[in-house]
Image 1 (tube, helix red, strand yellow):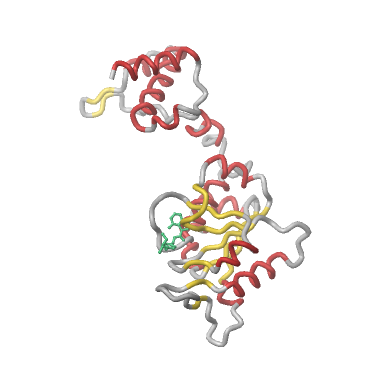
Image 2 (tube, rainbow, N blue to C red):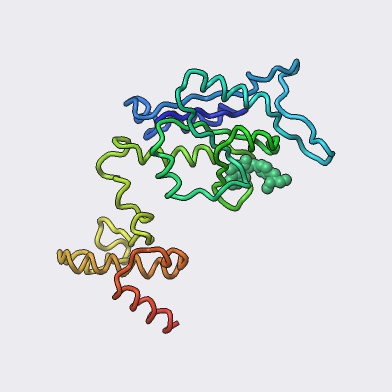
Length: 244
Ligand code: 9D3
């Protein structure tokens, strides 16, 4: 997997790229990343990358030329152009499903803007997809690009150790995770549920599933609509809802 990140703030990625999982993945050549400051592709005398909007109004708008030239420089020698993703508050909300789909590509180009908007021609003629990471306002697309890359990197085979296999994640069961405990069995009088100490594996599995269901009903009832549940579990949920 290769990422090319186009940003005016490449230094924001230093911590992320030198962090343990990412660093290991890059050292193992499983993941490759390049940072491009698209200001380097401005042909303007003052290296300008933004300008005032036609029609007036406040704020600045990112000019098309530097971004087009930066993407073209990256893809000059490529047979098939990799998807160009724009980090944008107006994008499609990012999901695990989208992370999985993107992880099937071998290369992705990510565009980050700051508080400025993008000239619409960038959207229309350079970008394949616009991605938002949620309904809150960031100062720029850089953190969103890191979120997107982080979620994809962990899906690349070999990046996670065997321990944290991406398979068993809560988002693949469609439910929130069950509560976990480790030693001591009694911490300041707060005891680990007996069932977990019982050694009855079937009972433990049932308890965990029940806890996942209850927690999901409590915190994320929206997830239950699409979660793969047994008829028994559906019936239990219906009962549970009519009780409250
Ligand atoms: C004046 C209208 N604002 C849109 C809500 C302008 C604006 C605010 C913040 C334009 C860009 C930004 C910076 N945010 C991103 O670039 C961004 C983002 C976000 O703010 N929230 C969630 N996902 C993303 S992806 C990129």
